[in-house]
Length: 291
Image (cartoon, rainbow, N blue to C red):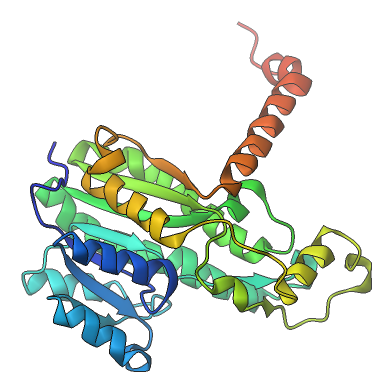
């Protein structure tokens, strides 16, 4: 199986590059000598970034992952001779509200950006990568989906849905030399936490003294201090993709948790599963068909 390594300079397509993790990864990949196609919904809003990327041999294209035809960008690039070796699905946003007070439109907006959006690009790039027997698809997920953070139901639902699809996809395309990575992110110094998007509906009084209200208050007042360094995190993603540094010998890995808070979150999930196995183990195995 052919897998991308540092012996070959790769072409990366990265979504959500106007700031934060996406922009950081663009810079790291370019510094590594790779061709980067950066994308954002409104490139004209960041002309200095567009100039920076293009001055180093990259491209910056307009892409709204919510657009039903967004996958056509892959076809256009491939037909023009741009082979997409690495697809990074990073674009996203998060709103804070209890599920009860979250409207269907708000939920659908999250699903469009972080579930259907990535899927459109994945389904568009796979035929090309499959024929080449090589490629990497990396989906940025979150500890909020893994551990179920109260007040982030719409976000966690979209990320969790993509996580499940990614696990299936990894098995389906492995025979073709394609890697599917799920990057589980904790809190990072990206500036995303500085923008607290609340649901349109008022928070019901009963939630104010619960985990939901407490977390929303922390976000709204800026009291949540991220403990992850975005530069270190994106360097780790880069190395895992290209097989450099710590990524050497990890070509078969499919999940990478990033951020100091992820250790606690993974432990919570492990404990939950261990507890369920202990409590329900007998009945779990006791409902089988008698042989």
